[in-house]
Length: 293
Length: 129
Image (cartoon, rainbow over all chains, first blue to last red; front, side, top):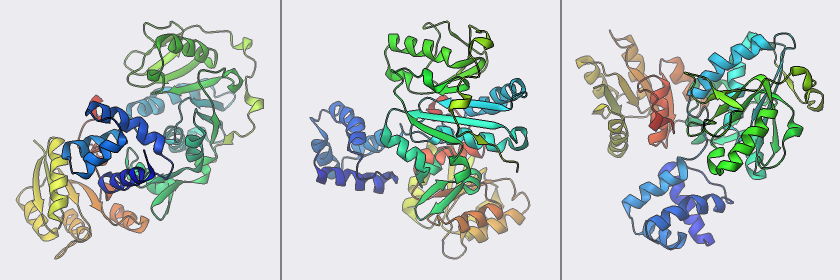
């Protein structure tokens, strides 16, 4: 794809959908649009651009669709966050009332919408967590994606997908056409680069692991391997949350689904808590202590 | 079938909005300004109102105030859909009784998300993906 074609697509997407791609998103366009071009019988992005310029309406719609629907949203799929608020957190709060600390891992944190959604959920719980030490570790493969997550800056388009307007008003600051999540929420999250294929034992153990919409990209053996290693990083009474199209069933017995709570799993093999001494608490100095409201 | 009143002075925006809202399963009525919208509401309160801000005759904010004082005017879910994207406008709208707020430009996903947010449509597997 040459720079002229890229600029055309950028402007086209901005105009047609509000999607605001920065100058360095060639890889994103290639990965989303090349399959679409092939499907339409076109050899490459260049030919796709020509088609768009000639005003092919069917193609216009599918290009916009391909570029926008796979984005991460705030509170993506909604239901997992209801489970987090209504099922997972009440149990974790009860179980950790003694030490008043909890650790959450977003294993496919992407551009930050998921960890920030969790941070907002925790904030909304208010007094129940006052004085607690809360750590959210968000990891992703891509450094570029992590930088965006760290900045907490989102386009107008992004903040309207899944984020209720009240949350936007409450937790974001407007700066021209962009919105930035407030420093208090940003401070709750540590962003780290991590490839799930590599060892992640150094992260320590977690009460809750969100690992959504990433395992679908791996083959079966890799999935099993990752599940088995996730099981070692989760507290015996912890929770694992997977994406809507993902499951442990038929792959591993290290986790079991919770009936009626789709996407939520618990570890099957309760190891003696003593075998895992205070985990990573000491190694993670940047835990945010929840302020009272 | 639920009814959605689309209020916007641009016929193009009304057309785009109509297509999106119909795909979500609503019967759609259109109005070009706040006064026309009030005529519709006096006849029968719609379940949903997608509301532009800047319009001739009566703007969206004035319409909202009048609507909320009408008998039964607290029933419709009102979702602003406007190029006014400043936090001051958003705060005013929400304080004035709006249920949600869309900043233009908008698309199907945004309208769907906002309609789900205010309970106008259920979250389905399809829309959740």
